[in-house]
Image (cartoon, rainbow, N blue to C red; front, side, top):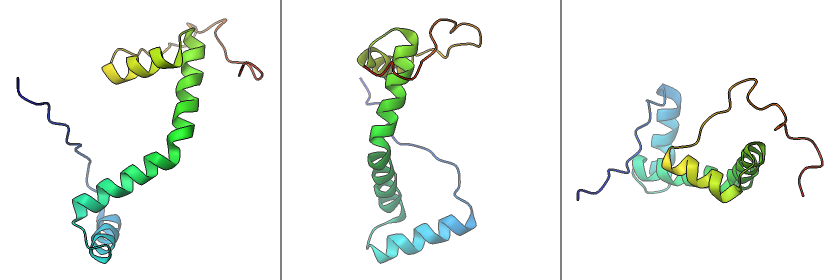
Length: 97
């Protein structure tokens, strides 16, 4: 079975950020692609806790576990809740535990 292409396609950065990335890559002795990958990974690492908190919130709102919500997002089966569907499911401060 052919391997799934996991490359990420992003739109152009715009002139300024493209120039900044070019310079940043050169200063770090990397290609632009490798430097962009490194920067994206660093930003995701920085946001890891926030992302997990948001997934936890969405899971609680749906009455499922964090792991179930995470898996649904990863496999593309997660559904957005339409306005009005979430009555009685609203998150309230203090529901953390």
